[in-house]
Image 1: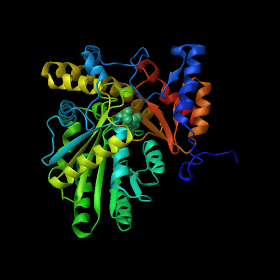
Image 2: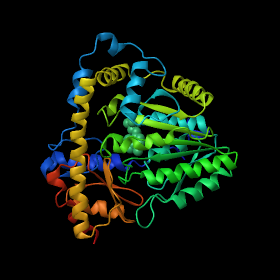
Image 3: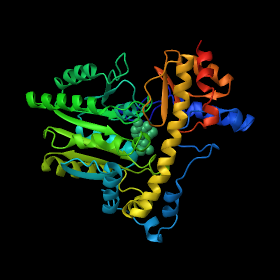
Length: 411
Ligand code: PLP
């Protein structure tokens, strides 16, 4: 065994980063053969129809014209108050829940997930999420000495699997005081699935009756990283209202990210928004999460916070920003629709895409198929149970015929 300097719990940490590997391979192929001959479906950010990363013009304008001190000075630990007000507006729009609400700025949506695991579960606890989940959930849990377990997201008819959800929640709630549940919706990564309003009703009715009849406390982490690309902006936000006046033993926390919605991935900014019917729970939420921020990254990127505060608080600028963003929302949906339609025609299996950056083909042979696709200059991501295709980055002209190429490779 090679020498180690790491403390016991940190020894042997290693990760096989399939996304990074696939993305590097695609980049090398593009260098060699040119971007028109390579389908790069590995990217997790919006590329325009020419393959360039998109920086929304309205955001760029605001970001590049701040006064000097806004680029340089520290921000408050919990975030600029004007930024947090902007987050409420941009996140909820007209669907703000009727409850006590407070927010703390975080390092992207990732930071909120980290804080939930850190502050609302105990060492050795199990965190529950769906079986189609963003790999970083597991990394965060493992790195903090927690375990990630899953329920089955979809039924055979591609609906939310409420029975599996109930079964796993019941099981875990018998074993631990707090149960943190992470739901990535709308526009789930990797499937593109969104939990419907009817399923939300079932989830919340079940959790409410559970906390009424047991001593379990539920922390419901809702990861809305793809909110702005999940469909019509009012329709996709209506579920937020359902978090009004829930039992006080349910704390809902929205993990909000500006990475995608404002095309500010590298600025590392987001917010966790706590929603509860109990003031004490929300006061505690603010306190403990701000302290964890102080103890982890201190304060966050001030220029990005000020940019969003300025943009969102000015009705005219906000409307221009939304119009621009909506155009990319539509573009991603048009690209996905090409793939969905062609998959249907040729018989390629596909999980139910409702919105977001990605589509997923279920298969147990993902590595083999992705390797074979590379021969055709097609780069997509092999997951444990499927293949992820990025609608956010593949131009329409390359989407055409892609489902059939994958289908033929799978045969
Ligand atoms: N949640 C999901 C499901 C994601 O896919 C991502 C980014 O890829 C995030 C959260 C967090 O992104 P960020 O930390 O950049 O806000």
